[in-house]
Image (tube, rainbow, N blue to C red; front, side, top):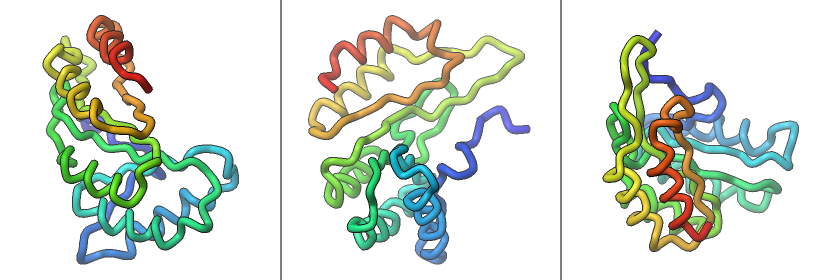
Length: 163
């Protein structure tokens, strides 16, 4: 098993321009799930999946009757590597849906057999800088095992956010 936890099976969008139908099937399963009052959490795993996914969502927007959260790990976090570039991701998503909730996080890796670094001041300040100019609701997904050692930084981020 990989040290880096993959996203939950039904919450990850994947696909490329060569496979444009792949995200559509995943989007459909989110948007027409049995409990329409739950948010549909969508997580593009690459920047290549963002634009096709937004186009599909836009074409289906009249059929969406639940909140939609768009999640992406836009910043380098403890041990992780950025998979979705922040500026392009935000520009694309907000151009289609300026009122969707953004769930913006960091890529992380956790190793059970060694000490793992937490979220640094530099990491949370960079996130605050990115979110300062956004108008829509924002959530900050974090890796639970890193919260205790990162509490001062995460608390500061939440206190500086008006969302």
